[in-house]
Length: 378
Image (tube, rainbow, N blue to C red; front, side):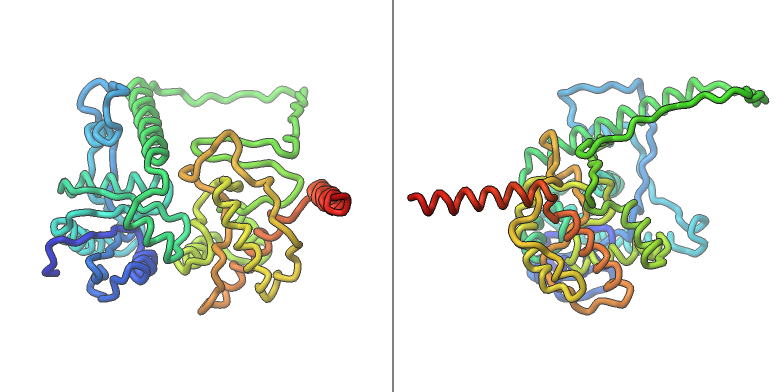
């Protein structure tokens, strides 16, 4: 590590670091990092630095304050002790890896945040930044897919829409700060509730629940899910359920396998609550669906024409809020048996989700008929 003007890329897991390193030409493998082409690529082994809310004074929010500085002022940062939790000495391994990250950080003019593409990834990076306390220029590589082009663009240029990303991050951090402040105030003013026994009345009250209609959207904290009579894209919870029932995978196995497929550039980031996509991702799927025709198991089920648009975001939701799990358009290679099973499960759902509804097929036939009629008359 003799270079002085490195660009260091920091991500959460070695598997992701390996994929990023290959994409940007950092091909020299060292203990805890990759090096080459002016880059170092390293990883943190998950969430290593923990943040605990501990305001030193009455909590105040101001629109003129930068959210990152407010976050740094109101939280304390320390290394998480996993030993008791996981049952083996992970802390020693984490401390050693953290020293590697720190050494590379000191030698870098730019540090690229390539943590997971969600608010947890940004917070993990901020925790690391304020724990190390080494000021450096930071660039965010937002990588919902790990194709070579996406990695190189993210590492070199940052988010595709920096203003939109900064607005999203600012809002997300301030929401976290407000929630933490409320929780702290509630805790300080908490009172003891005595345990009481109650009698249940004999009469039964019937509660009627309205069933959401097709097209109804459920909005949560930076996510949107859509109710549909047709198949929607997978989010993590849906994938866990189907993998358990159809493949007999336990949840840990599904998460591990899905992350492997993400790191192998075959699917988008799978740890999501959304089951819809933004307009830009739909445009990519026009090409990706065509490539899925070569899938040995489900390719013949793909219909003609562009995929359905019904899974676009509503209310101008942006890319940084995440999106449902989609394929990337690359052909799978070197998959284990478990990876192939889960990949084909996701492929099937992607094809079903983008299949045209009967109404869409009818409208498309009508459009073609009118177009042909117009051509003949002209």
